[in-house]
Length: 68
Image (tube, rainbow, N blue to C red; front, side, top):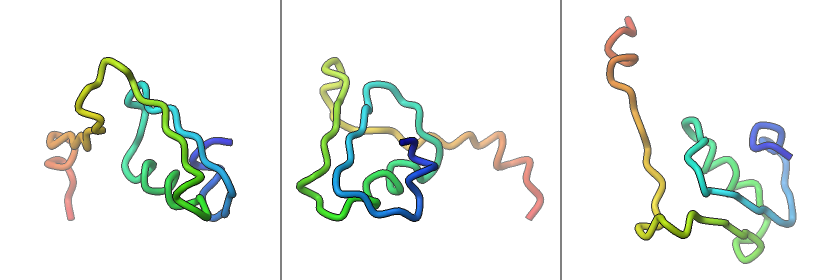
């Protein structure tokens, strides 16, 4: 099931493949928050990424063009 399809559902087990950065804003939170228990979450990380972090990338040039 995709992250978008899981939104609003509760699931017993969550598996995330984080070997590449394919997330859009908020998707990591949505993916993790759908699981009913934190001990039922499994994450696959890139073995070359020793920092074990994902980056929150913001494109300022897009935000600068917004008229709020």
